[in-house]
Length: 284
Image (tube, rainbow, N blue to C red; front, side, top):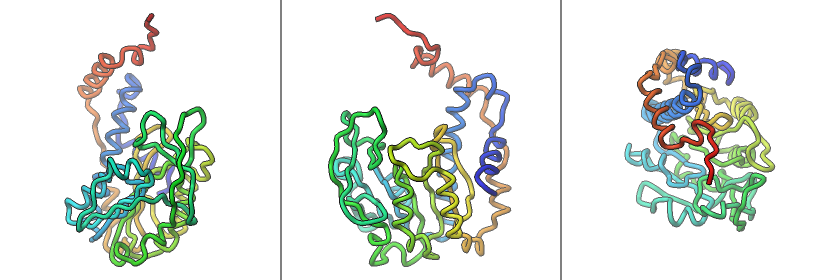
């Protein structure tokens, strides 16, 4: 299935009349449910596919690496932001390694932008958005292909977890050999339908087209945000030990967002954010 077909399938999977009655609340729950479900399937498939390690690109707190570690896998966490690397990313151990580099399609130094009021923010980027205040520094960038030599993590089955804030073109083109490696079985990658970052070269369909040409099959997507979400890909060669039809029968089963959950969430949001919920401008 292509991206449009999977998008419709996921929407149908969670379809409910409540979406018309409480669209904002429904959309928020829908986003959280599909994001959680995609991640659950990523970690289930690590076991199904016999994957031995994951490489987390844009690691921040390295949550994916930590969970993979708890499952007995090795993990490499790559984090560009020096402050995040020092203060947020967990320390290395025998099965977990962290490195402080950005990823791109060539080696060198690039200007890196961190929000002025939050130096460890997850949306720190090499692609600054207009109208935001940033602190600017220079950060060393490398190609993923170079970082994976010697092949400590790529010598057996591995997966990629990619969250690179508008740098998909540079990161993926700097990882061509890694992506062509038959040991690379699965990829989770964050994408955007709109250019949310300055100078962003690729949007969601560009990423899909690029990975499909390298023999990856799109399995699922979430709806984490309206124009920014995650895609899950599987290497076509993995289908020798993986039944796609069986996966789709399981993954696209009808799921219910209960009316009770919708009402509870709506009331909670009204109590917590009355101005936003009712669009009320209160006098100072």
